[in-house]
Amino acid sequence: MQTFTMFAPEAASLGKSARTRAQLMDAAIAVFARHGIEAASVNEIARAAGLANGTFYVHFRDKDEVVSVVSLALAAEIARQLDEDMRDIECAIQRVVCATRRFLQITREQPPLGWAFLKACQVLPDLRQQVGVYMRQDIARGVKQGVFTEPVDDFLIDCVGGLVLSALLSCLSGTAAADAGARTAEMQLRLLGIDKEAARAAVGQALDAHPI
Image (cartoon, rainbow, N blue to C red):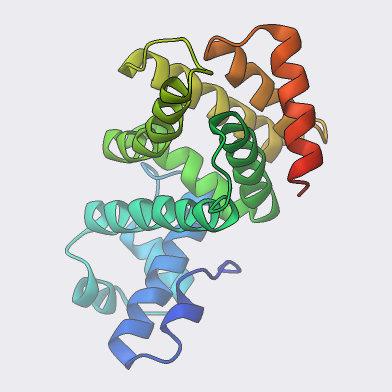
């Protein structure tokens, strides 16, 4: 079943213990994506990795620990890719547009990662909070730049994040159009206080300046 590898390549040059741990983490993503986190079991994760249950417990205390480790690692990896893509972008509007489009592209191109991330967000408050930290930084930047007018509070972050997760579900389910990233970004900008025409124009400018 395991076809997704995110952690194994990074651990390829490390010792056997690190490689085995990475193998289990990749297997966990595959199982979470297929069955959901609550229905997943240690036995399924070990089997997907081609390892014995006892080997799993050498590296993780229980399923809850591997769920926590894998979920936060997913968030960190996605954030790393987004930061790399946007390191030269200062405008908060363009950062929001580019982050949204790139996030949906990354998860759309790697469905196991996307499904695992989506299902983890549904059941893990810590992961949602971590994702919210990244969103809050760019939104606060926009308030400071004078382009976003809505107060930055937990409710706003939940609304913006919920919009992205809904778009992710549509993309993974195959119901979203090719312009889902642009449309989602436009809706985000409107939530942040930018009117419809200005939001649409801003998305168009971002698409021209930073094509994917």
